Figure 1 (cartoon, rainbow, N blue to C red):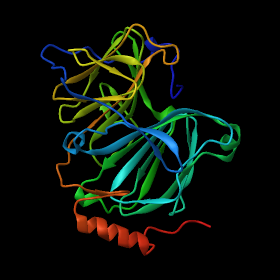
Figure 2: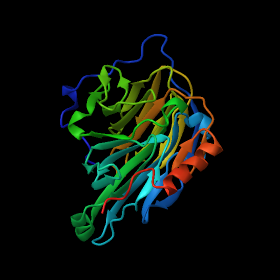
Figure 3: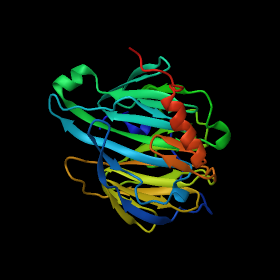
Figure 4: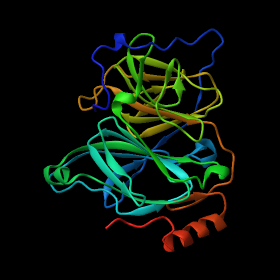
Length: 315
């Protein structure tokens, strides 16, 4: 799992220890992600399945894509499809993904890069592995997070942020036992490069075996921890979690994640996604690729898509 790695964590800025009076966030719920398939048939874990949308707000869903080692000829992507009313955040941990859209945009993301797409008023796009990867096979692993937009921003013009791995803000825990990658939001002294419509933070943390991470977290944000790989605990009550499980946390000043001292050889460290944001608190009407506030707005999205108002697939 390369993403961004650092040989010597002691060279990084350190997060401070929780202060006197700082409250840890309690664990409210632990769920296990079911397996499924997306696009043309690549495997995913539905990271937040079983969690009430009111606890996820401002997020809609998150998929863990892979981790899978493709044989030659096996890599798959998605066909052309529309989106309206929210943002997709695709963080590529291992492998390569190419994207193209109906507004002339496109690019490639690989080990540690993030594609932040604001679908807004409507866009068509496609995500595919490059031809050389299809022919050769290889490792594929990442996440895609859907972030809701407030009602007054659902129809903003579509845009992209292509965040390179070199731009991600890095920090370590106060004992230098964890690598903290801040993709969006502010965590301790570090601010991630992602520009968000909805106030939020997105972190990928790697915790060494036996180490503990106390992650300062905005009081106004909710907090969810999803385990990409490894075994450990969440919260000061040490609720056990493992690969493919999500923990919903309550209010507090910081998030606590600890890695078991013994990890399996295939996943020698504990890797987690920590995400949270300021709840929007608005009605959600969600149907397939459209996330709006009312049923009529969803029906209008389907009508606009069928009329070609989202743009056209390039020749």
